[in-house]
Length: 233
Ligand code: CA
Picture 1 (tube, protein in one colour):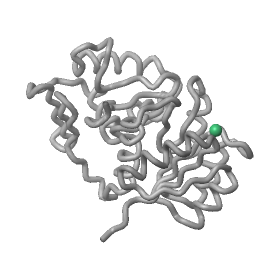
Picture 2 (cartoon, helix red, strand yellow):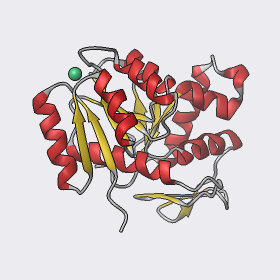
Picture 3 (cartoon, protein in one colour):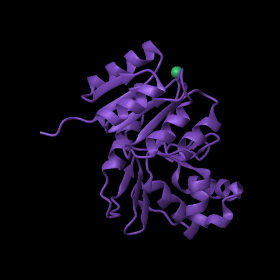
């Protein structure tokens, strides 16, 4: 029997730490809770968790620095928790190697969805195999290069397809503007965010019932875009 994933919770606020502990143990994860950056690094070494859930606002050190230190050797996913309106901090944490983030306050289903996605991507085969992505009325088959909405084939331009396929490969996780620009248009065009806005808008017109109120391709303000997983409420 394989033991359930061990999650290292790094949170200095006791009520928040208790809530996280009870939610995660209730769904079967093993958890270990620490409240400082120093203990986070020490316990990550000692316990080799399957995932680190890291509050960025810690008493002894900036959480972004903790991400940097963990990434020097640790491969397990890091999901950071940050305050609202802290876009610059989120971008720094992602640049330092964090896999995803949650913005306070967040709901239980959002929390569990982020953790499932991060653990699943960490366990994904390294052979580059690409399963079919399905969420609600949307179905994307990367191998056959086929997109269907409610069973109807959707025609995409080459750039729209490239953009969608990057989002599918990172499904459920935030993808930063810079990464999308680099993967779709190449490194020379990283500084042209308006490309992205134009093509996201055209993709939404084709994939969303209400393009102004997207269900699939959501905006992560100041950071990037996320293709929602089916189980994200
Ligand atoms: Ca805190």
